[in-house]
Structures are given as structure tokens and as C-alpha cells.
Image (cartoon, rainbow, N blue to C red; front, side, top):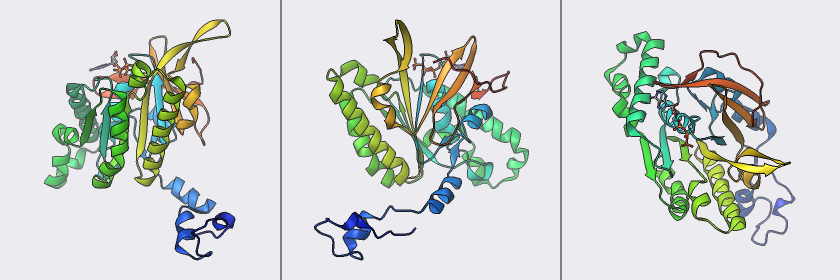
Length: 305
Ligand SMILES: Nc1ncnc2c1ncn2[C@@H]1O[C@H](COP(=O)(O)OP(=O)(O)OP(=O)(O)O)[C@@H](O)[C@H]1O
């Protein structure tokens, strides 16, 4: 990584000159565009379980970025959150990241029986795609047990916004001690803030601050941050429209935004915001095994919200 000498150091009282320690610490993060491209290309993705969703997301949920996933109740946000907590653990030898997950549950929607079922679904797919994995060493086989997948999800149940702030503030220390965590999921990020927080301006500032912190953590610890969010109705141009909770006020707080919606009886994901990918939508399904491709899996470009 190259260090850049620039006017940045000028005016820094404690600066000991261009080569001084304070200058290099201020500019420690500077990279050239070539470094950035290499970094981007080596960046890992977490499989959503649906090839079509992965496709519109440019490979899956990106590490080192914050992705907001919103949608109406029942559309499958929690299912996708659980699926990601499982899929992040797919061992490296089977094309996964072999990481661990942090699941911060604010609504009490994390059903552990369902997590077990989704882990079983993931394992059965691995066994189907890698029929010779039975030949692997016993240690490798040990990993392919639902119990092991469940054991590698660190679960935090949050019952108020103060607890949520406290846990997010504590997260950095936790991640220092658990450096194999590759995804942090918050389900849902706005729930307690919508219920109990009266001062709207302060609420937006607090949430934006938390989100900024999560963005920094995602980069520092090379992990994906996924913020599940609810939708709410907003009265604009003479009609009620669905919009993500706190949508406009903190839309800068995430790098990517995926909106899940119904189109008739089919579930779709719509990539609404990305710094490098076109807007696109694709169908997906929630099956007994978890999130998978829809039976009709031709991606379409439609927008519902
Ligand atoms: N075992 C299963 N097999 C098939 N589909 C399931 C199974 N379990 C849950 N689902 C589907 O997932 C839906 C619930 O999705 P989920 O809980 O992720 O919704 P959500 O978007 O998080 O909603 P909310 O905002 O209320 O939390 C159910 O309505 C059902 O359609």
C-alpha cells in the first residue's frame, strides 16, 4: 500500500514533517486506484442461496460493505438473513468463506429450528454438488453438521434501542476477539428506533452514526454488514407509497440496497442502490431448504417500489 505525502499534513499541529509518524498515521489509509481495483477484484461474496439474486448483486453479498435489505412483512428478509448466516460458513474447500456470523435480533424473529433446517438444506446441497466430499478427512466432515453451523452463529437478542447502541459499540471488541466473523446481520435495524424514539432528528443522527461505525467495521474486519429493514407507508403525490423505514433520512448509510417485494405470488429482489452495478431485479423463492432460485428464474427488469 502506498503512502501519500500531501498538503493533508499542513496545519496539523502535532505533525513532525512529511515523514513524521503523525503524518503517516493520518494518511495510513491512502491507496492508489490500482490497489483499489485489485482489492475490489479479490473481494469475497456471500452466496444468498439464489443464483439469480447473486447475479444482480455481482456475486452475492459483498464483504467490506454495508447492504440494506428491505421489504414488507413476510417477504423473506429474516429467511435471507438466516441463509446468509449459514452460507457464510460454507467451508473454503466447497467454495465458501469458512467464516462465522453475528446475528443481532431486535424483533425475536430468529427461529432456531428454522436455522437448523436451513443448515441441513445447505449441507444437502454441498453433498449434492460435491459427491466425493465423503472422502474428505474426518475434520472436514465434522464441519458439515447442522450443529457446527449453529455453533458458529453468535446470537445477540436486543430488547431496546439502548441495548442495540451498546451492542454495536461493543462489536469492535468482539470482532477483535473473533476475527473469523465474516458477516454481521441486524434484524431489523430500525425496529426499536421506530417504536421508542420520539425525537426524529436525533433518531436519524444516532442511526446514521451507528451505520457509519458499521461501515468502518466492515472494512477493518473484512466482513459484510447486512441491515434488514422494514417498510412503511408514506403519503406522496396524493397517494400512499411503500418506502423503507427511515428511507430518505439515512439512505447514505449503506453501500448497497436490495428491496424484496412480491410480484403476484412470486418473490423478487430489486437492487435499488449499488456503487458499481446496474439496477436489476430477479425472482427468488423461500423453500423448506431456505432461499433458492424461483422455479421461473429468468431475471426481469421490473420495479414495484
Ligand atoms: N420452512 C419453510 N418452508 C417454506 N417457506 C417458509 C418456511 N419458513 C418460512 N417460510 C416463508 O418465509 C416467510 C416468512 O419470511 P420472513 O420471516 O423472512 O419474513 P420477513 O420479511 O422477515 O417478515 P417480518 O418483517 O415480519 O419479520 C413465511 O411467510 C413463509 O412464506
